Image (tube, rainbow, N blue to C red; front, side, top):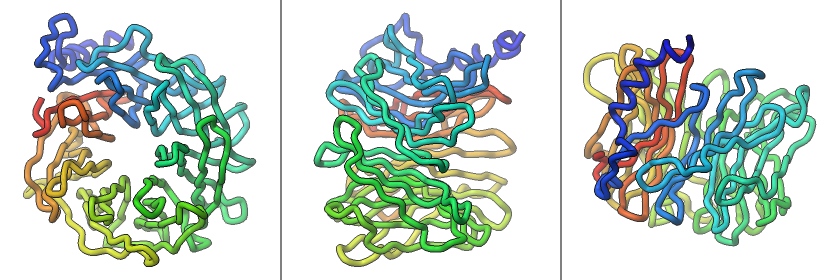
Length: 398
């Protein structure tokens, strides 16, 4: 009966997607596709692959146990699944994949995993082959809850992972930063305090810049969320200062990118006094030997109405424009929003992708093959969810 209940949803969704049996070459520039096996999928990340297709990571729930597995989907350039996709990855207990990187011979995925039904989460790093077969997997943790949230491949070919770890003394979360070699061996790991015994790290993302590894995070301090930026010397992997940036309302840092001039671009969400969210875009200076400092920030509101936004990911199109993906919420309806801004943070254009139920934008990447965008998000209704993949041209059009 569960499937019958959602037949109208499936029909609506299928009508918006390209027909895989009637593909034309020009359709590679735009499509909407949905992926599910149990209607419990949640998407986290997507990357373009060397063959021009795409690989996406998320989670799916085993209906018999209620536990999560990593859910790996591989498509061709038209968004059609490869014959071996999807692949479920993980052990017998809860496994979550949050970030994926593409390497020559496969994919490397970061997340967190439980090895027994009573254990805490460990940071989980797994490498698969080009068809999702597990080559090696590593659990990095201790007796405390450790969760991997962001993965990068460094210029030296190492895997740089960021996450959070519960501090046993205070019950709050600190940063967990780990460098792995190409075989998954730990090169260096570091627990970094948020700087206050009462401030708990909620989430963290990390990038490699010209001079640093830089953490951008959300920290809960005095019952309010704020952004914290921490640069770390690449040679020593030790903190080089850091600073918290509060705002009038709750502030969430969800993505950080490096600009061509070495400065940093932060994307996130800021809440106002009524609880409505706005997309938050900020340029930060990152001069060597000094802690970052805010220059100015931009919010990208929509005039009129009770509309709320979240900003989840930003990519730099060029020196003069940025693309931001997030979610637009109005009267309980969620749609994916794709925004373009100029280098000063002023909005250039916006596009909405939505239908019945909810559609929420999670992450995006620029596609090297045509300069377009590949967007990933979630689509569903009530307690059901599917992974959604949207391919646009360089202007955000299907």
